[in-house]
Length: 146
Image 1 (cartoon, rainbow, N blue to C red):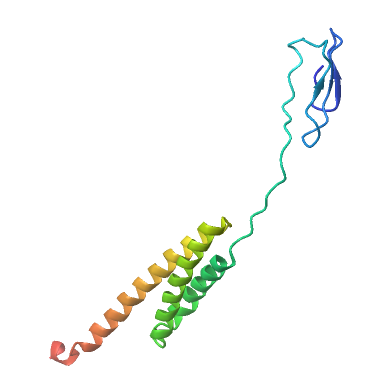
Image 2 (cartoon, rainbow, N blue to C red):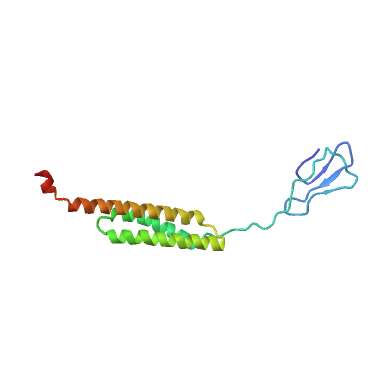
């Protein structure tokens, strides 16, 4: 009977099969074995596993964007220029990280894209809020009420 482990012998013939595993040589079948009941080996030697490092600039851009979303939304009214600067810095670092990932073939493309999307969304949100506050402060509320 056929087994995926080690040496097998077909019950009706003298087929001897020796599998050395995925990291060794492919399976060896004796030349007198032509029985189709013995399946061929599905083991193929693999090359070394390549581990790609994550781009540090993409990680930093993403963490800066998350920090800006958490802290920036809380301090947007008190320090609007700080939040604007953080959004612009997140956008610049996101674009630099995306270019660096593309050139070096490192992992981190999704982090750079997420940093860009969140930074652009944060910038748009802040501009809308600050524009609304500016418009609200310029209105003469006493003239509207009286």
